[in-house]
Image (cartoon, rainbow, N blue to C red; front, side, top):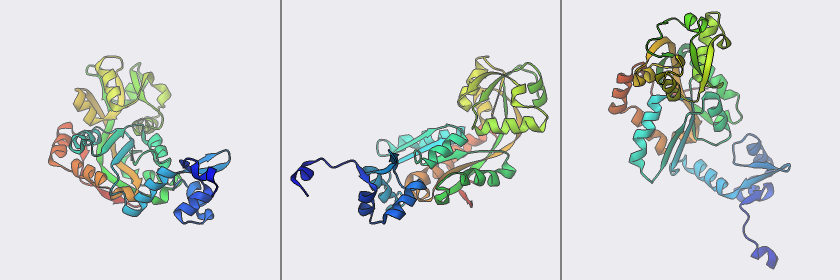
Length: 301
């Protein structure tokens, strides 16, 4: 090594050759891991670069199943009970760890999981009866899904949030009359469920008079409370929390997709324990529409 090389600062990124030597892998195996997004890497100018710090994190995750990882970032489908569990767990962790929940919608959440931006993706897609096949199909569409697992949190009642005083109690009437809808974004499980329910009745989402796009269940409910919309897709729990009327349309399954090694993280196990606690079960009963019987069950892909 020349004197100038010795004096140069250590690069935060490694080339493929350097990363292969660092990890004691051959370059062919390293490229396979990079292409399947199973290892942190970025393609710059046609060449792969490997951030040294992220490689260290990846090694720790592989060696210890995430037991020492101090974060749990959740994206995907929006659920009030899951949000309550995160809020209840966070104060107990203090500054020692981070548990965060960003309800981006089912499809964006899975994409973030595939890109290793988050640790968990919550999903609810279609009716509960067919959810296992539909959820597995969604996961298999992403590179690296072979290292994922699917854990069921529970079932919940899904339908339409109604502003008190609207007076209409059938989906066909809500679609056919000039009723103001607050819709959810494409890729949201709530929107997908509504579109399917409308199709079963001979309607399309375009037949509804949409006046707003809500980014979450709570935002949709707030629009109704402020009389800025009359109805919105959502779950019974949110209707109860905001004092709204509710039109039930069926049940959905709430699952989380996560890398198999994340399943063994202390933080994920603590989250499951919090969801199953007496406090959260009592909250689920007060909100209504939940069945937590399958909480924690692993679903094969």
